Image (cartoon, rainbow over the protein chains, first blue to last red):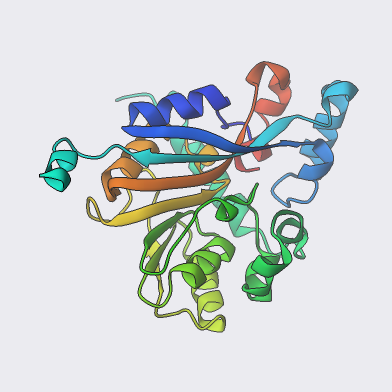
Amino acid sequence: MAGALAERDFVAKLEKAGFVDVEVVDRQPRSIDDFTMYPLFTPELIELMRRLIPPEQQSSVATAVVVRARLAPQPGDSEATTS
Amino acid sequence: MTTDLLHSDERRSLVREAYQAVDSTGGAVACALYDDEQLGRVPLSARDLALGVANHMAFAELHPGDIVLDIGCGGGIDTILAASAVAPTGRVYALDFLPEMLDRTAAAAAEAGLSDVVQTVEGEMEAIPLPPDSVDVIVSNGVINLSPRKSRVFAECSRVLRPDGRFCVSDITIVEEQLPPEVLVHPAAWAG
């Protein structure tokens, strides 16, 4: 989670890499309780999050997204298919 | 001598050690993310090791014959779902940097009768060991956030995908200002 991007940065980096039609097709807020399912989140980290994150934010500390995109066709592809 | 301000090696070691230590989630993550039809296509071993963050396979629109790359296959749940969708003529390259995970994915594929469709590939997402234009679709679940070099990962995705190829990925996003610094620098937060 510490290395996660903001959604706008995720999209921007994809576009910079040559992807088009980038769309976020699903967004699900993830709570601290959700993270307890994952053994990668140690009890110490969960406790730290519960202590330091304001109670009103604990139900949405991150967002799970599904991102779809398409690699741009190579120049000339459309001409090749229509000629 | 150069200084790696991203602490890439340190972060890679943290992720490696954390994932090597994972034994089972008891299926909790899989049951929370996938529907009954999807779970019915996956061996119990892959369900128990699911560590993804969302269900992008519901949006991936895979077809028989597609060549798919699953970045960070882990225990293999998405690899198996992809393989069952692209079989019998397609292929799924299951990429992971941990041999232990590749072994688990291969075992799950064998159990699902999909060994002919799944090919495990050891490597890192920042240097995908596949040729250019070799893949129709890239999928991944909760893995790209683990890389300290995400622009490099996206560049590699662009290289291995064929023109007009598709990318359908689940990942975690955050609003950094909303997370306390003590959380962001905690070692477990780099792997979780």
